[in-house]
Image (tube, rainbow, N blue to C red; front, side):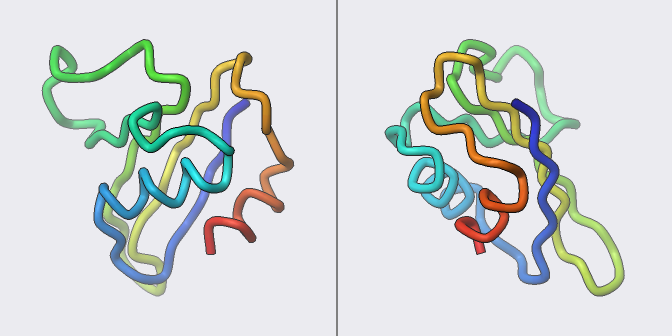
Length: 86
């Protein structure tokens, strides 16, 4: 399942991982948060949940692209994930 989220405040990658883990009912270590322009060799491509984040301008601070693999049991609707993440 793919999710696209926006935040109005800057959020650290560690906070993103913790929030997504809580939202999706998995361990924090199962969430990979990465800069899409970073070194692809450093990515954990097998992580159950991956999140790429980009800083954006205007009223929004971050754009998050989140992918949960099929074996992640809790895969809410995007609107529900956004509400949980907030």
